Every structure is written in C-alpha cells, then in structure tokens.
Image 1: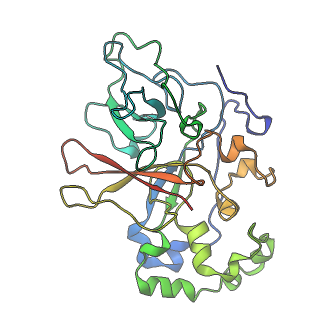
Image 2: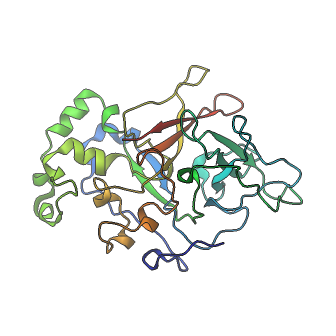
Length: 309
C-alpha cells in the first residue's frame, strides 16, 4: 500500500531537492583542503508512489530472483527487511562490481550488536527470468528498524573532512576566522541557531555544521560522525572507505540552516516527519549507521559503525 503523501512534500514530475550553497568558500579559505574534497550524494528520501521492483528506493518490494531463498537472520531465524536499493546508472558513485548493476542493503529489524545487523547484495538486473512475488515479512520486529517506502531525489554536494580529522594547523586557522567579517552584510541575514546561539561566533561549529559534511542518508563523501571518528580497519590492514550512511534525520536543529532543502525552506520548525524523517527509521537516539567497504579484498567486505548522541 502506498504511504500517504504529505502536501508539503508532494512529488510531481521533475521533483527535486536542492541544497543551498555554503555561506563561505572553504576551497578559498583553506586551499590546503582542495585535494581532499569529496562528492557525496544526498538521497533525500520522500514518501511517494513506490518505484518498480528494480528501481532505486528505500524500503518496499526489492528485486529478488524467484529461485533464490530470501535472506534470514541467523540469530533470530527471521526474514530480513529491505532497506536500500540503488541502480548503477543512477548512482555510479557507489562503485559497483564489474558485472552487477543493482545494490541492495537488507537488515534484521531486531536489536543486535551494534543495532540492526546488515547484509549487502549485488545483482545484475534482467538475468533472473522470474522474480520473487511475495517477500516474506519478519516474524517479529522493532518498529524503529522498519522503513516506510520512499522514493529518492538524489543530489550531489561537495564535502570536506570533518573538523576532528583536520590537522591541528588547519583547525587553528579555522579558529582564527571571523565569520561576521567574512560574510559582511550577509551576516545579518542569518537567523539565530535553533539551539539559542549564533554559530557565527563559533567558527569551528560553523565549519562542522555547514561547511564540511552533510548529515542525513547519503552515498560516499565523509561520515557525518556523531561521536567522533571510528573508521574501521579491514582484516587486510587497510582503512575501509565510507560507502553510505543511513541516518534517522535528514538534518537537525543545528544543521538545518545549510542542509534543509531550498524547496522546503517555507516549512517551519517543527519540521514534518515526512521531511526530516520520511523513511520512519529511528536508529538509537536519532543516530546513524555508517557503512564502510574494502575494495582491496576480493569479496568487498562491508562493515557498519553505529553512533547516536
């Protein structure tokens, strides 16, 4: 059944979500970071008519060959649930195996350590003559791990390393910024932050919330850490690369000024859940699960890191 569509987030032909430009030019102010800029794909999940079985989406019915058993959690002996499906032609930044063109993230909707235990699958669309018609539901589940089906409205943005990952001399340089002077008359156009303070007086917070990593569910770029860097190391000894993040919130009261889409700026806080939490997932205390991959190992292992405030 198609979930109800909030009139404030209704999706018509050509629907998109757009991030406003940063208030300051990081590449000019911190030229030493030019080689460390990365592209992240904000997925902007929104409730709407479910895409086809092999379409890019959150939740809903996924592409799955009829002759192949649907995955089951080893611990709970319960079917996994569909979380994220991505087509290669729409999301090449994800990086696909040579022969595959469809990515799937599934997980067990019950508490594990840490949180929902995942599995990743790669497919080649069109190879299966018949698809599994009815995906088996889980035997039991925590509602916080069950997604509301969503369409994706992808947008590419440029990210820079999180503040805690910068070298000390770069952090010192940020601390010496005077955002009010750098912005000039534009500084007066900015509202006070939701938390009751103005981050133009706190340049490191300004960098962290508006100029470095975007929050929300996304592909690539840098993890928008909540509790500090926990990049996993693969068994081969190499640091793993951030693959994607699944986040409870698309933005919050600290990051909305930059990361609330332009098309939804008319919406006042408290923002509708169909905007800030369209997929309905609540991971811990408004947390995120960060997925990392190692492409040096032949099986491309994926590991997760879970964080919340």
